[in-house]
Length: 198
Length: 198
Image 1 (cartoon, chains in turn brown, cyan):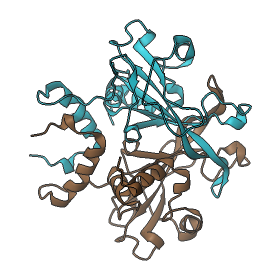
Image 2: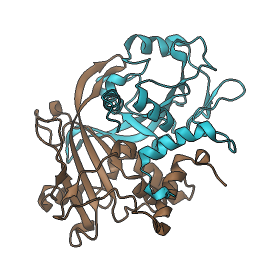
Image 3: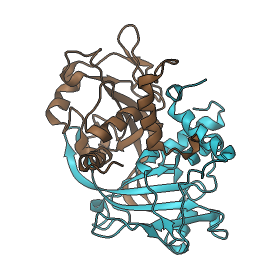
Image 4: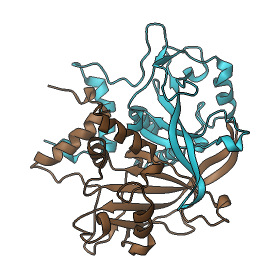
């Protein structure tokens, strides 16, 4: 017998992943959901997923118009995280969410810098052989942001390849993901390759 | 009957929290551990906790010597996160970890900005009535960073009050925590107060 209480979060995530294989009684836990028209239903609960990094492209360093304003808090779903740790690869149905956060100020008692303010947008890239059989890496890219609003679209159609994928294909370090800016992914991958686990 | 597979991460965290109350068979899951001398044993696994924000105080905006170089990836342990969502308070035994990450560059295809490089340090604040009965808010502050090394101390003694606590007392928005820079905490608190849960 075991108690849930004895299970570390990392192990619980692994158990969830494994449970998907033999559960006959329940729908699998899905982070990736499309509607009948093939639109991606906006992911929820991602602030409890695994944070992988926070690039910052502030408006004041981009002529007032950053392409991705301003902090990008980036998360991967927990099942794909477990798979990444083991393999250094992104599994089918990986969901990576980029939540955009404004800069609230540039000075604090801790020093000069950039400090996170309010949520201003949400984007996602998802890997799906079923939905994107011909897309490079089977990735689709989505934008839920509503300009000048703190609301988000409930669902979104995939972006045209030239809007997102082309740049990701040419510049991202690993399978269209900018792992070069995501220390959490890089460190976990290094440990996996060394066979030391986490 | 339920399958682990049907349980959302947020609910699992809540279950862990509740499980602590009635488990008679196992040691409780501890995020907070002190040695016999009262030194804090360095937390592990925190990259799988709840990310709460990423302040940035880059060296190049602080005369080359930021007090907290450079990105601060800040996390709260999952049980204390569940409590925060419900109450907007930090429970006894809260652990908040600040992992320091260098700036690897200031230009990317996404724009000009700041991008995360390598891990360069680790600090923590922990709330413990038992260990810090007389400290304001029962908070203790710890530093595991080894200068000019990518290693960390395995344990650390609490910092003197004037090193950390005094500033936190005077400048942090909530119970010595700089929630004003942590949108994840602020958003969860707002939801809790509105009674909508997460």
